[in-house]
Length: 76
Image (tube, rainbow, N blue to C red):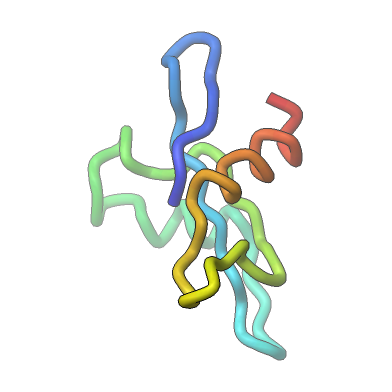
């Protein structure tokens, strides 16, 4: 989960999800799962399914690159 630019709120929640091979899911399924479990303002506004994450040499996710990719993908 990363924060992406938003003109009204400053930042909105974007969930970047990598599905396992052979699995399928819709963004509405994710929002429905989150509803009632977490606060309404924490439910991701944007849900993007990705094939891979940008990683460091040691295998950690580079969140700043992921944020840049999502802002470019969502045209924000």
